[in-house]
Image 1 (cartoon, rainbow, N blue to C red):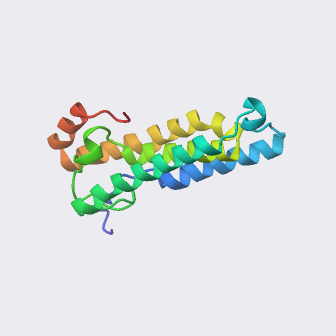
Image 2: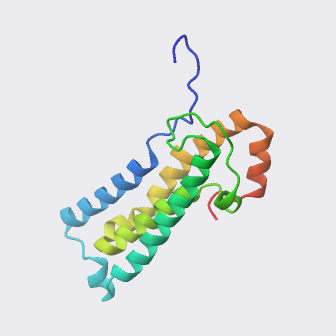
Length: 160
């Protein structure tokens, strides 16, 4: 936009999938750089089956949640304007089912790859998501949809 008009998007610090991938890669790099043991060697248990279950659940959640955005005719990417307030389907239970899905996928990759450092980075990742993405989206949605969004926030939890 030009002429000093405010852009119509949440102004998040980065696209959420990029944040999740960045933290995963940082964890894998730390594992390699510091010679950290794998989760498998620490626990003696293979992470493949739990990883597959978490990954499948994460992708199912991600795609089901995204479908509600498509159905409502609004944008999914955080740098695009929201044109509708989505409160149906999974959004009746969580305001952020896409981020829940991404978190499950991240955990699946952590387990499948056995990355101790990536697991240790999960709380920092969730803090970055909370402060740099979710709170910004909430301010944006409240400004855009007003009382309808405030009422929705009162009914539905942020994560679960």
